[in-house]
Image (cartoon, rainbow, N blue to C red; front, side, top):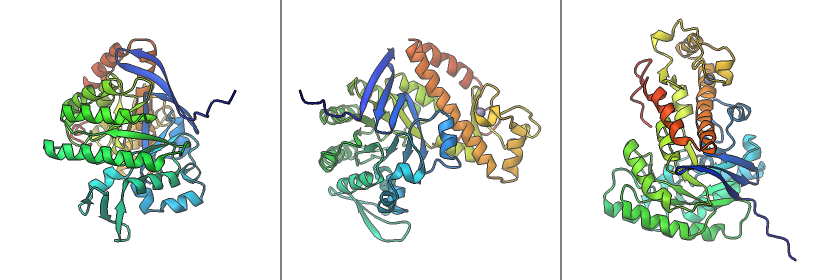
Length: 387
Ligand SMILES: [Zn+2]
């Protein structure tokens, strides 16, 4: 009897509540529970946080950006120093994106069937990013989950543009899979594009699913389409994805987006919002977002959120102290607020997961939003942040 082949990647679906799911995805660097929210470590660092602080929020997996790391310090140096896990001192699972999202937004990007040519913003040289190159960079970085190189269609896009994006995404997915073939220590996820056109989303999803990859992502969302269209696109696409594999909604989002799409069967999220907002003094509470630079917090002796158990709130730091740190431009403001915001998101997905396990996700979501949305904008001027 021959031994079963090693399976470093395995998704276990533990429970369902409506369409919401609770599960766990095993990787060579440990398993992470789903729904999962991945803090973003663009340059191999979650901004203003040490790996210990990130782990203490309950985050089990982080995202790093292929584009930024390839430009600086370069994937070869990262590989030489032991790979991304050793380089950034993160022991748990890591996901890298393909770099496509950043490259497509560059003003110098020239797109062809071969790939994308752009100007290196660090040293001015011309660089080609192709499906083969995106996979080679991600192999060198060594993340547990790597993403296919896709064409992220901007919003708004006409149907012809979206159709071209789907065609290229699928052709490039074949090339990514070929470049990745035989490599078993990293899991390649495919990406569904198609903009806001239902037939394109559906046909793209069917083609990506047919590739039988270990996970599937929905891309081309959180690009300015807004909550309602984001939910619509997810509603069309998620039911077409395999039950026994993780589903990742890329670049999403605000707490209300995360809860709405967990309810549609999404398992994985990433977004810069918790850390980016923290640096500009916007923090999340159970009663909505507040902006700590508002003068109403100058003498406020409460923690950011009295119901929060993060190191900042439980550590006794007051809103008045944070208000002072922002006014004095102290970098500790970014650290303390990032710790809080990342913990807020981890509690959000952990509470959602618990509700799914109890079969009560819809009630949980309704209760959360009743408190959260009921006080939207308290603290003044925090209602208009862009994604
Ligand atoms: Zn807190």
